Length: 83
Image (cartoon, rainbow, N blue to C red; front, top):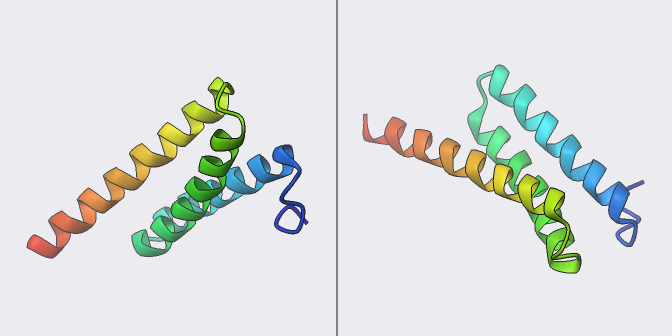
């Protein structure tokens, strides 16, 4: 429903949070690649929300958290491929 309603910012945020929760599940299952995919989806949605409402500090914080987690997982993936 949220995917179909791109004009409802609250539903879009909820969708982004849901993707982030899915990422946590994938991490716990040991699937970092799928976790990254889910986090990138969350980040894309949150990025669009922040672009539309740049004064929303909560969304900016959540976007930064997604960016940080993506960077952490990408760093781990690079370390794994080096070894």
